[in-house]
Length: 399
Ligand code: P1T
Image 1 (cartoon, rainbow, N blue to C red):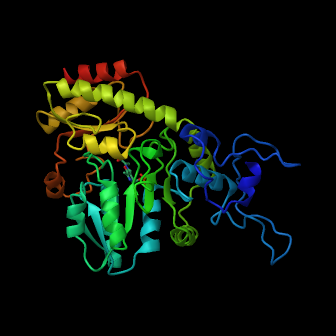
Image 2: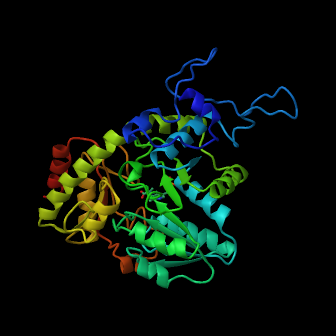
Image 3: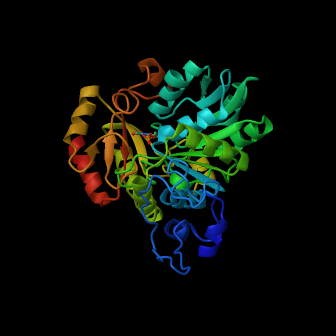
């Protein structure tokens, strides 16, 4: 394996012959047993910003840290191996990954068809930043292919979905939408942050690009800000790599190391996140003060069958509506003891928040309400604590 990794193209993954958990531990970090090598069993943190060469015209494997760095490269290989992708690229945040992707693929006048429920920061990037460069966006209910197909224009270049969405936990029928994008020569981007590659592999379902906020489940410990792009097409990879270096929003060696470390337990963590989310969802569904619970793992979720057909699990995030007023919701959130009132998700600790005032506050109230983000909608990310403690905490705060 060590020999094979020496000849692989930077950022490219080995064939996915080993199981997911095995790849999560080993891919990108095969010990180098050649003479004189250290045999490290974990990728080292390479802090050098530049690399010496013997001759002017003869650079070594690495030239300058922004272009590539051995620690980031190990992470890019591991990420690609986990998403069944040929190539991975790591960035300094999820939004940096998104920005790089948009810069690499779009020009003024191009049009994006996007899911109307997306992370607020992604919508802000489209509407407040890329609009200045002449990029247009239409939002549709991208649960199925028909609304996407109807929104296409001659200038459409890209279809952008999250599945499940943030914060309403809607799903996109990725296979059906991929047929539309293939037929029309468009790029299908799937933000896979909520399920992680452990539960869903959008490239296998027909997507062209997978986006991650590495800050969430992939890092997994609320101590890394990072992003990633995964692709199969060499042409896409070369463009993205060019922009990764030219725009410069790369992940640092230390954050790459923390992410490599976090990924080794991704399979274990995702199972526990999901187990806890299910226990919480069942508890909330029966509670008299809760009017609706949104979680793809519940049979009451309108796309529960699609969830089972395109993913191997439902993840650890759910949203729910409290009966009552905004002050009631604030009281509830402030009384919790085990849950932490904070933005973000996907860490080992359970987090809870009010999207209308926190993660999705950058959206207009009317636009929020139109798609169902009410003022009292609460989103929670189940951590890996004991389920009984999480349920008891919700129970006392609701009482
Ligand atoms: O925060 P950053 O690493 O830049 O990732 C942005 C991002 C992209 N995609 C999805 C689905 C996300 O949820 C996020 C970030 N989301 C939060 C911070 C949040 O609390 O929802």
